[in-house]
Length: 62
Image (cartoon, rainbow, N blue to C red; front, side, top):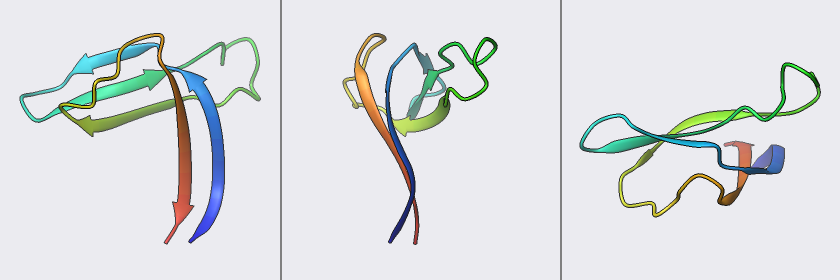
């Protein structure tokens, strides 16, 4: 697999989507610094993450 990007970020928000999944999100200060990366991704319930946790986001081409 070819790695496209990998970065670490603080988790800002955990949203309850439905009984199967949550949404993890971090926007950081994208309005002030256009170079800052952010994410918004759905994950299965049971992940154990909460706002303030540090996470690593990796995108790979398969």
